[in-house]
Length: 487
Image 1 (tube, one colour):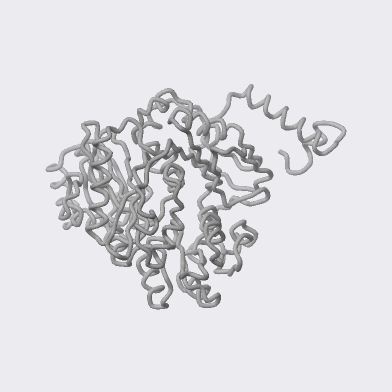
Image 2 (cartoon, helix red, strand yellow):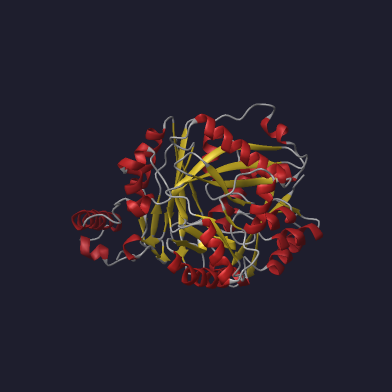
């Protein structure tokens, strides 16, 4: 049994893991960089260890420093969260040598599914449908161009070590191919240290459907239904939900069963996500497998009533999935939608917005869950992802759920860096979104306002100044506005 768990991550996922550990009576260790010394995850843990300077490579990505923290605190397990070291086989291998439990799959599974080319080959062999393409054995530009002509346009150039849209280019015409190839390789080399690419047929207006899978150490694999993640901007997910809207029951069952087959083919252990793209013709294809817990896992937890971090802990301890389900079938209950609140400026190409969170307050509702790793006084820095929180709502129906989440987003109060809350509200209230007609180009095609009109902003500004005046018990609005970093 795990007695002390170190969370090799930061922010909201670290907070989320620590809370489950507290529920289970497991002691926790937080790691932090110099930029995170006062962060909520550090305060919440039983112990904390500094692992380096603010830059990720000097702290959260520094395997040696993390291992030293494990030894120092005598932790017997590590949860990697997502990002950073969560999909680094060498980290999992290092923990194995230390005889420390890694709450994730085997290094072999991580390595296989982390290579986009080899994972495609493996999935094809397992009978999992993959997008027609070229696996990139020959990286000569002329050979790649020849293969592109065989596939046909439009097509996608993708980095084999890719993720988050980096090293990915869409090509519509043959004359664009070589310049797009060079750009994709250069971007992939900079981001991943590997410029290898492969080619895929481009599926027009696809949907992004992913399936939450779980495997135990006894060879059992099951799914916990699908999630729709089609609302994306630059290949980054913005809104996620479960169940997927307008998905025929037979197709849903088929996608989920294929996801289980994919996980079984690599003897997968722990939490993972098998991602597919779904065409307008109803055909779906394997996209990739994320060998970790996903950012959007709360929507699955909401509709199933399960704690997936607890599942990760119990599976790592050797429990069977049947022990976790108590022999009962997991069922979907209602609908859940997640929106990612970012410190970013929609009116300035969504560039990150840094600074102190002077004040932050989320509504308190029975139907609402807020996962966050910041608080009033926290600083959004240039070193890490600028996500402030994930807001997840539940409803009996999708319409009720979307309305509830929009209401919660609208009631959220954040003073400090610019945020995307108004933009999220616009998506959640959009007529086509409410109908469930989503696809990965939805945000590109729909006209969604980035911020309130100037009159609304002026009204809000006046109300905020008046409220601050009352709070500060000052003589007047403008005197109060000069205090407390209001501007």
